[in-house]
Image (cartoon, rainbow, N blue to C red; front, side, top):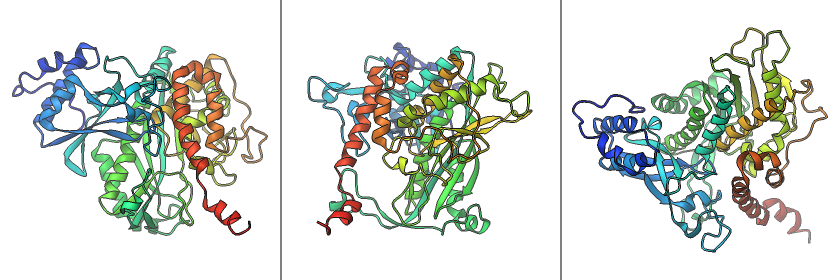
Length: 489
């Protein structure tokens, strides 16, 4: 079962009025008919619990679970959760001084309100008595939270629509699945963050797209594929990637909000389905295990007119359309500042290595997998598009997609033109991508473009959350330091 947006059955009278009289409808935050139709579906189903969730600042799903009988009250009045959930770094520590008089966007650790989106309701194929619904967090008054990821993307989409354009994105997502040999569930391992499990690969690597490796991994591939299809996610292919136990799943094009939701649901279902089988799935870019290959997230994107005509399809072979040229130019112009949103982890910058099928500098090329932007545009090809290869699979999709929309729009608004495509990706005299999260934070912090596009409060918020992570990394004594200095001095 997906969304319950349909006519309320005759056997379910009285569902509309409580929702219409609820707090969310009174604040203009709930589609009453859609909510009532969904509630009727839930009451006619075998669902026992609904997991009421939102994607936090890291793209991690958080929330509470209610019994099915209580779901109507959530659709009517929302769900209160602590505001500190929006203030956590990746160790789950609160990165703001909520008990002081100043310095936090949410003083006193009070509540925010989760507003469910009926269109995101999904019954879980791997746990069919339970369902997910995604929510938008707002202040208790109903006022928007500027830095909340899903509403932030919605505003960027509206800005694009105001120009008469729309965007389509396609996803290629790489990740690893390992067998757990030691789950590290000991009291001494219950740290912040918890100690990682010990693992081994399910198959040897460096056998890219080989049939025999696929056959070996097929039981896991099948479970994940069926879960995606059961959730209604537009899955296209399941593939063996280069590294040991490395997978790639691709998804057909959709609008940005649909695929941002797809990404957070996909990452979560992969981890949950695998965990139930004693497996550990990770979207970490470059796991610290022997012979691991880095995982990337390749984001395909095209720009359409109001009638759905692809504005990136060349009329003459090899000649970029003004839309494609301006969009590419905008992405290149703001690539460094956007890295905090496309590559938000310390680990992600260790992927930017030359000759590794990952970009290390800011350039575009025609069907060139070494460049940051790979152009896939040909005369008569209605699927003409670009592929941005800069992102890591841990990126918050709402922030990442917003960065692409805002950067591309800026290129169009300013009449920018794309430079000549490069042939030798790793020899180009182009600006290099940031080499660390710390550098990306500083550039984002100083970006007049993002301060204008997102607002000072949102930029300051994201900088503080990510700087907390970076500062903890700098304070950590690494294995390299121990080996380098402990015996020498």
